Length: 218
Image 1 (cartoon, rainbow, N blue to C red):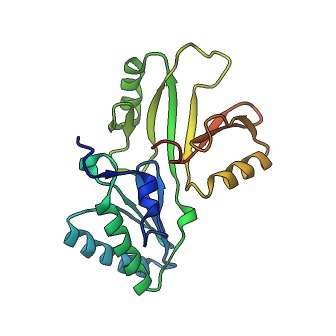
Image 2 (cartoon, rainbow, N blue to C red):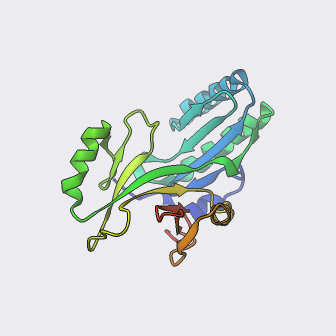
């Protein structure tokens, strides 16, 4: 894999014409509130034509009330100028169809498993989930529907603390609001030492979740 031509999330957001989009780690995402399946299909048709013309193909999720689009450049392992160009074109197509974007609605969900011996535990989860290998520490749903699993290296056992948690990656301009809502719902702040990259939160019984952004990872 080459990183030639790769851009950072900050560079993506600094570009003109990408206001509809939010970077979630290394993927640019947009959600368009179509309001109907027919309108969504029209937008998907327009995206298909643009993607074919650019030879750059996003992941598109068509649901009854909305269409979600995810852009990344696989041969650089992240974002590139090609993603900026196609993002602009997709936003233009949505505006022509009078479909508005809802950038604050996008998010990504991962399940994190803390492990002392990651190679020993990863095959179990791959088999029980029916998942495929992703990045070196990831397992992914072959159908790209369910959350990915990733394995975080532990330095020592933690018998009094849960070792499976969820990572919720949200737009960078939503994170503090999401953290505040979680605390208001009875959550507890475990640490904000890594913010704004991530906040570690826990429920009333100590089960943990992280609210994550791309900030601080460049």
